[in-house]
Image 1 (spheres, rainbow, N blue to C red):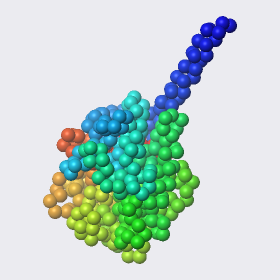
Image 2 (spheres, rainbow, N blue to C red):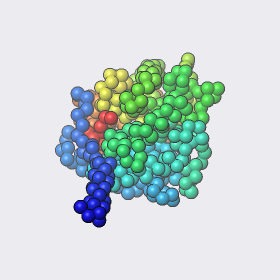
Image 3 (cartoon, helix red, strand yellow):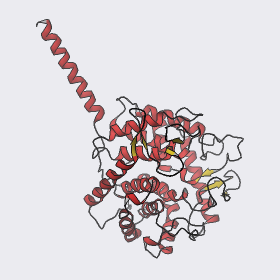
Image 4 (cartoon, rainbow, N blue to C red):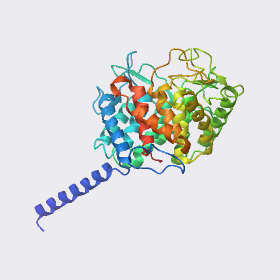
Length: 411
């Protein structure tokens, strides 16, 4: 064979190999919709077709992505827009939400991998001071970290999103998602988990001699995440975190909210005298109430039953379902944006907040007796327009709609 022909043939063969490799790297292994079979007995809205559920999710996703997934100044990076006053461009909590949502919507969104990788690069470009794989919790509109502490919930969601990405696209491309997830999880365990009580710390700057070392944010408990973290790393300490926090939550329900089953935003002194945080402990006068952090707890815990059938999750969520159906008289329009642990509305909170409404819908899915209630809450939730709410409400709505439509898959 002539030398020129051999060169051409070699080049052609190399191009074919490269093309095959790229196709493999870009292939979507779990395209939306997945129509997952959750734990036996789990319900989804049944008054509309699966196709309509999927279409509703996709329609809202397109709006959500267009509004919140913003290109950063740095080339090849993207962030989830914070959208609230205060000079913040992005917070790690939102970045985690966005990365999970994007990974789950791949397939129906042809550019999902590109978007995910851009979100990853932004996360990677903004490390916290302690723990190089943790994300600095907030950036200003110049893309500069506002401080160097982390937010535990954001880091956990980012880690989970990387495990999703590994299952969705594999880890043989430009970004080794599995490797990055494990590196981040090592830092989370080291800096954001209390190594004495194996409960969840508020951030990477909570030291053993800090007065808040035995305090925790209830919404940081993500037991289905922790099961995935253990599977990915083989680290049995995640079982300790799960068991200790379930035990803590059960005790708090029994002592402080026996009727409503609610938890406060923050719990102090988990090691010997767990109690709701005092007013103005960290964020507001309602730090010891069921407020804008704890509103996520029913969703975070219920998912552990949906995906893994953990009976502790069902036991925790059941009284919340009974109470919310009773206190609203079965009408979602009566859901308030915050409650005392006794189950009373917080003052001036008689308005709609999707971050409260959506998690109650996920909680309802654990039991067939909630079917009519779940159908009503779904209709109520999806009818709110994106333009009328901020990134927090809309992102929680987006995540919970994916779950409620039966498209949140287990790693």
